[in-house]
Length: 607
Image (cartoon, rainbow, N blue to C red; front, side, top):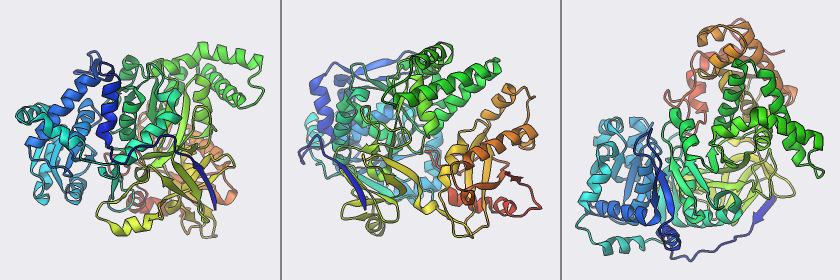
């Protein structure tokens, strides 16, 4: 069994909690800016100092006390990413309670499950639509005493309610938890089965963030460090960063609407960003299509190739040649600086997780000047277990274990993690806890390998392994991740369990198709028309053939079928972190899967 460990860098006394982490930031720099937020989309970013934020936290915490919230009670937050999310999270901790995040896109059934399973007593939702969803199932959650709506003055209501609560009461509650106390219950996205409530402790967040800051100082703690959160704060990845900014001394901003994300990036100007690979793919594809529409496709492609070659040369002990450096400088003047400008012009670092980024994009962005540090983790590991570091990076891997973390590969190839970030238990689910945890080691369900320097590479998910009729084991992620980067393609689901060969269900990207058509001198087409267009199909054929080069013939896609609908969060086929709900797709599109294996029905053969 291969194993690699990174020693703990910072030890924390067991009687401390996350409120102490915030108190340290407040004491160190009370008048330093912690958060910047907007009161209206077109308005300026308004700075909030540690002293000002602390006062707001205490005022909201008092309101929660006045509403009858006791230490250990669960308080739900159902909202998009916004400043109030950060304020509520810290206020709930200040009240001694436990925040329970709920995605604002959750169905009534999902909301009902979380409210009842976590026994949420008070829920803060963002808007009337969220409140209406809760109303549908309010009778199923008898423990829910009150629902407050942010857009209808929830914060102001809490502040007014707490006016008579003494400061001493909040101070007492702020010291009531320890590192071992539950800090939050985050429900897994539920790609299969009912979501499980992951109990993460104050120690999980506290110890992990302060140790991660030590390993990522150049990224998160440099003078002027700032980041804009646009991933959902109901997800552990964004939650981890929002806590990390406190010990890092970084400034945090929030962007709640993808339609205004580029505008927000341009005005906030982060020095580091965090995103899932799909965001990096979209930025690349959008830039390529914009160049093509302006008749500069060849220039973009040469610049992109130069960026990748230049980045690869950085890993050579000799470094890039003088000629390559000159080519890279020209590429930067013509194209690459525009990519940096899309991210606000200051971003030098990015942290990517949730799915494999791929070597091509990793090298492209490093050549652009944005070092993408790919990492790996799950809700159960408080987000990161491994990450590439500024001083230790191997593009194509998910990095080395963070300080205080051990990673090993089981005999069957499963990645197992032990360390300061591993969750305490699944809420009220002892059987699932016992199945996933053994002697402190968490069975991640991921498949991977460790090299002799401790760098982890992820090859797929154990539960998603396909076994063909010929007995060949196939990891679908290898093919899916490569195909998903094509500008025409939105989602891919590789199939073939107990079948004669591997096939794929493909959806077209509603945003990518128009740009691709324009770039290739073609008229506007509906998605249905595009799915039958010979040039579109020829481009996808080439993409499939390229993806197939990464695997053996027995593992390669022989036939694909374009679905007549995209897979989205709204229609229930994607989780909020954009993972495909494979079981749901296979059930609902069973006829399309069958068609892949019937030569008389629609499908596209790959040569």
